[in-house]
Length: 68
Image (cartoon, rainbow, N blue to C red; front, side, top):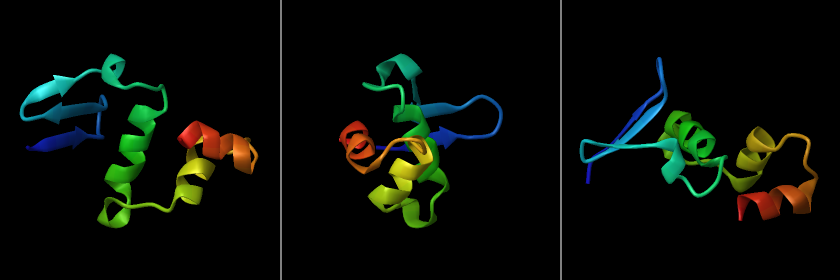
């Protein structure tokens, strides 16, 4: 499986040449999470880093529930 993530210009995700539309993500934060991971070293981030980036105003448990 080949996954291509375009970050310059319009954001786009392709899986084996098929475009994955934003409507295919279960949650609105899905595309933002893909963008964060695509830019992260080794495509990994600690969950606290993700929660802070996606929900900076949420407090611990609330952000954790959003990530779950």
